[in-house]
Every structure is written in C-alpha cells, then in structure tokens.
Amino acid sequence: MKLEHSEIGQLLRRRRKSLGLRLEDLADESISAATISKIERGIPSVSQEMFDCYLSKLGISDLQELVDVQVDQETKEEEIKTKLFMIKSLLDHAGPSIALAKLRSLDISNHPKYLPEVKYLKGKAYFIKQNYEKAKKYFYEAISIVENHNQSIGAMAYCYLGMIEYNQSNLYQAIDYTDLGLNIIEELNDETYKEEKYMLLLNKIIYLEKLDRNSEAFGLLQELWEHKHKIETIQIKLNMYELFALILKKAKLYHQAIRYAKEGIEMARRNKEHSRAFDLWTSLGKIYFEMGELDEAEFCYLTALELRDKVTSKDLLIDTYADLGELYSYQKEWQLAEENLNEALKIGNRYNGFKVAKVLEMKGTLKYHTGQHDEAIHCLEKALQLLQQYGSIRQQQRILLRLSKYCKDKSQEKYYYYLDRLFDTEEELN
Image (cartoon, rainbow, N blue to C red; front, side, top):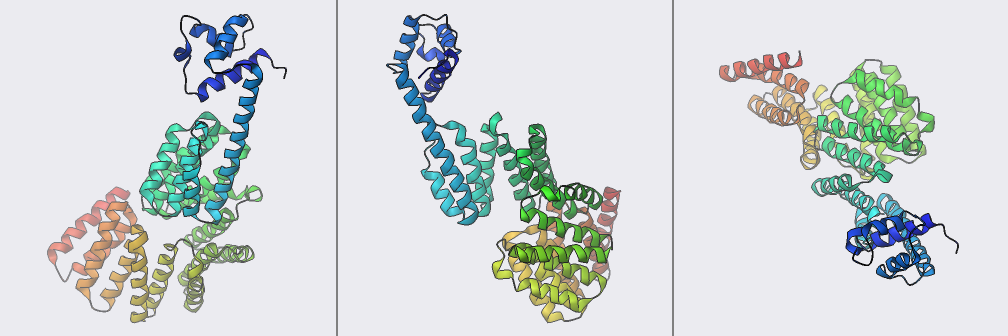
C-alpha cells in the first residue's frame, strides 16, 4: 500500500498512543524524542535507520503490519460505534436496565475517545431510573473529559443536569445548567445539533413559565415556534402546544389557549403519545376551570386520569389529582376533594417536593373551609417550609397572606409574625 510520509506518521502516532506511551517513554541513546516527533509529523529527512528503530520500539516489523494494525483498529472502532448506536436505541425503547448492562460489557479500554459518550449514556440511564445522584455523577464525569470533537455530549449532559434540578424543584439552577448547554451549542454553530438546541430551549421555556416569568417564556416560545417545521422530535412539538395553552391561559386569552390545547391533543392522539396527551388534557381542564366551565374541566381531568397507567413519569399525575381536588373543593364536594388531594400528596412525596407545596396549600384551604383551622395552619406551614427551600417567592407570599388571615383569631403572635414576613416578601419582590 502506497502511503505518504504524513500518513505513516499519523499511523505511528496512533499506535504509540494506543499503547499509552509518550515520546519520552520511547526515547533513549539510540533515538531522541525530537527524532520521534519528526517521524510522527511526516518529515522525510529522517534516516531509514532511525525510522526502522522507531518501528521496532513500537513492536512493528514492517509498514504492512502497521497498516494491518490500523485497519484492525478502525474495524474495532466501527464495532464500538455500532454498539453505542444500538445501546442508545435500547435505552429509549427497552429501558435503562438493559442499556446499562450493555454499557458495562462494552470494552473501550483501547478507545478512550468514546468514554465521554459512555459516561453520558450511563447518566441518562440513571436519570430515567430516577437515581439522580448517580446520574449527576456520570454527567459531571462526561463534561470533565469531553473533547472538542464531541462537545455536544457536554451540552446534553448540562441539559439533563437542568432536568434533574427541575425535578428537584431547583428552578434557578435548572436554568443555569440549561444556559451552559445552550452556550456550547451556539459555539458549535452546527445544524447537526439543532434538535439538541430545540430541546434545551424548550426546557428553558418550561422553567421560566414555572417561575411565572411569562413574558420571557412567551418570547422564547415564539422564537422556537418559528422553527416548528424543522423540529423532528414530536415530544418537543407537543410540549410547545401545551406551553402556548398555559401561557395564553395566564394572559386570559382563553379561546386561543383552548385551540392550542386541542391541536396538541389531536397531534398526541395521532402519534400515540400518551404522556403528552395526559398533560394536554390536564392543561385543557385548567383553562376550562379558570373560565368557570366546571363540567368541562371535570371531564378533561377525568379523561386525563383514564390514561394514568400509560403515563411514564408518575409525577405528572400530581397536578391532575390536585386540580381535580381543587375543582371539587370549589363545588364543596369536600370528601371527593380531600381524596384527590391526598392521592396527589401520596405521589408527590415520592417524586416532587415543589408540587407537594402547591397541594398542601390546597389542602390547607380545604381544611379551613371545613372548620378544621388548626389542620389548615399546619398544612400551610408545611407548604411554606418547602417553598423556602425551593425559592418560589410569589407562592410564599400567597401562603403567608393566608396564614396571617387564618392565625388572626387563633394566635396574635403568629398573626403578626406572618404579617411581618409577608411585608418582607413584598420588599423582596419589589
């Protein structure tokens, strides 16, 4: 095989690195590190004697053997790439346990450039298993060893770190991680990674909406909507419909919100996206509830719950049970209301502390209206404690207002204490 000096040099460099050797490890009185460097750079002035000496140090008898070694190396690399491709598919279709077993059996000891991807896939598997501590460990490791040619892995590791923080109700940290991922994608400036960019943007919109930073969320959502025809991932499109519905509801543009929710529900039906359909039915119920159309709202919530066995992320159920409980409270169906709120708390205590605070607030209101004032105060105090941890000032303000009201006739000391804290949150918001 006819090879240029530069090609031979590259083959020799790869051979040395595959053996885990530095230039200095091979240099001695017979050949210097500088000469080895010249050979690897393809400089033709090096004598045949020095060239043969270097081949011998690498355990190569002739160039054909070198080419054969390289072909073997490339074949093994193709096998690793194929296996990683298969594992990614298994992770999404067969589940994280099978993917993790395949990753553990994958030998990349002579191919360290694939280590960041292996770490990232392990992190994603543990994320799906909701083992967030292990997931974070592998995502951090992937970021720390990622190289220039696979920076997108770092971006997606930040994406999932943001999702972990969101699931643990640390919304500001979730936005910070997401911005780090977006910065990497922007620097890459490569259309190959457009789906990664859309996913990161969508997540940021979700976090902003949850923080009631609605104008920022709506601006980014409109920006993302302009690329709708380019987006290939159906879940991203469906999330966009839901976000439009929720943000338009907040703006009291109810009929537009209903239109987006129904269009999303139809798209979810056609694509058999059960979890997204569940979310969209719940969102549609929220819109009807706020409009005062209670029968339609109840129908939407109950329709959503018909899909509960097909929902993959069980924490999605929390909002629906809570919203149904709130609806029954509004109708003074106290027993039905408490049953649904308790179901929401039961799920929330396993999955999502931020949502638990919202449910406790609802339950506290229910207890107050049914004359159980001490229990009402207890529920609201627990909710306030959770929100202090998660940093939702507006929710804290709303609960402090209720606590001061509920404590006025029960405890003057608590009444003034919560009133003072209410003023503090007002100053902080200002």
